[in-house]
Length: 379
Ligand SMILES: Cc1cc2nc3c(=O)[nH]c(=O)nc-3n(C[C@H](O)[C@H](O)[C@H](O)COP(=O)(O)OP(=O)(O)OC[C@H]3O[C@@H](n4cnc5c(N)ncnc54)[C@H](O)[C@@H]3O)c2cc1C
Image 1: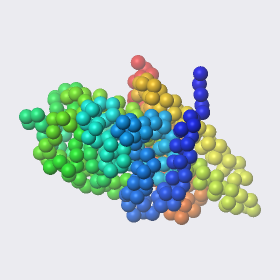
Image 2 (image 1 turned 30 degrees about the horizontal axis):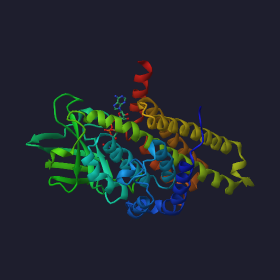
Image 3 (image 1 turned 180 degrees about the vertical axis):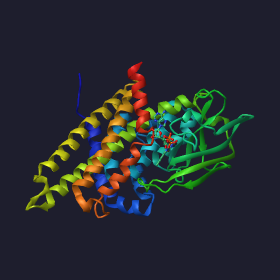
Image 4 (image 1 turned 120 degrees about the horizontal axis):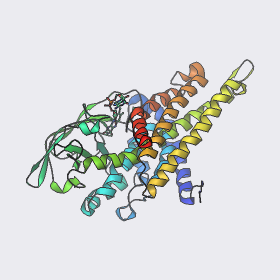
């Protein structure tokens, strides 16, 4: 049986998140973007509403609504503010989710309750200056010292870098390209761990993206996540879920573009009638609405499969590929529908266009998603 209806719980979550985004995010997102201000108050409120605990089991204070639930939530949040959206996505999908899946009971007990309440935020440190798409080329080193590990190296492009309290860090513990990588839980307060340069960005400007530096940083042995040498496997499995978060971010941005375009097209008059009466505008709106539905179906299917424990490497790559390209097309069309007004900060569509750009780059650039899909399809 195929069921296209959301459960009562997820419908309620969707409505609650939509109201939160309308009240707390959309009216402020423009200012946060302009001032590059981290939306701390909104994140605190999101935590109170349980939005930071959606991948955490109840025994650790979470709601564990699953991947589909996370997608429903993230679409609504990103419709209001993509910077808040990526903060919540990384915390849930790239930090809490792998900790739940690969962590020891002691690790979960130590960190998850703090993550569930939002007392602590999490981040994910895979990329380096020389290792982006080729993540297995990472050079950050972890050497054994007694039962501890000593980390040396630097990570780049870390979302929430300056605001997170604890990171999942991938570092080299052996020579083998992929099996020589291990994952560690590293608290920012550990000596030798520091925040480096903050990037000045085109979009998602309220989300701080920073370097994270490790200089002789001592990490207790019990903070190894998973087995030694299992890090790359953990990194890739985590990205299968994370990509659904970015696909949902793309859905949220696309919906914001569509809604803004419909509103403007009905109000703006040229040649004595609303521009919505022109077929050229109607076609743009029709394409956006149709492709949004298609992208959501791809995303929710992959999330539903992941909730069932089915591997979704190809399906989540397809969802991210399609949804992120759509967000960019939709944002471009939304600016076009707004004409000159769309090119100014009077209207949010110029921000949507800048925010949309990142969805095709992080958690695997567009061509990397195609590579993953092609590899699977040709095999
Ligand atoms: C705002 C922002 C936030 C980020 N947050 C995080 C984070 O929290 N944690 C984290 O670990 N990383 C993060 N990243 C890093 C992000 O995941 C990488 O930027 C991304 O994986 C691309 O790597 P790169 O920038 O090194 O580009 P490159 O790998 O240098 O790629 C450049 C271009 O070459 C193409 N290319 C590369 N290899 C191939 C190939 N084999 N075939 C075809 N085309 C190819 C790419 O598609 C791309 O178009 C973030 C990046 C940004 C910009």
